Image (tube, rainbow, N blue to C red):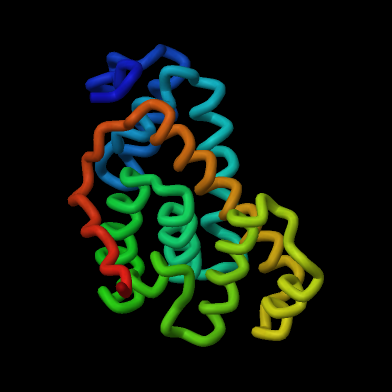
Length: 184
C-alpha cells in the first residue's frame, strides 16, 4: 500500500490533474499508479509529463530509452520502475530477456547501446560527477553531443520516478520483475 493515497480513478484525482490523466489514458490505454499518485500534485504531474513527452520524441530511439530506464531503475533500486520498464521493454520496445538482464546489470548486448547504458549508470553512481573520459567513451561509441545530453535527461527523468516510487511505495501495477541472478 502506498504511503499517500493513490486516486483510484481519474475522477478521484484533483480537478487540475484530471485532463492530464485522461490524456495519459488516451495515449497508452491505462493510467498507471505512478501517474495517479503523482497527480496528488497537479503541478508535479504536469512537470513530469512536460519533461517526458518531448524526450520521447528526441534523438534516442525507444529501445535505448528503455535500456537506460532499466539500468537507472536497477541502480536506484526502484521495484516499481523495474516492473514497469521490464514490461515496456519486452512488450513495446521488443527487448529480449538477455538484453533486459544486461541493461539491469548496467550494460547492453548491443555495442553502441552498451556505451549509453554504461554512461547512464556512471551518471547515477557518480551523481553527475563523471569524468572527461566517461564523456569521451560515449562520444567514441558514436553518440552526438545532443544524444549525450538526452542520456543525462533520461537519467534525471527516471531518477525522478524512481524517487517518487520509493518515497511513497507506489503499489506496483505491472508484472513484477524477477530479481537479478548475481554471480557468486
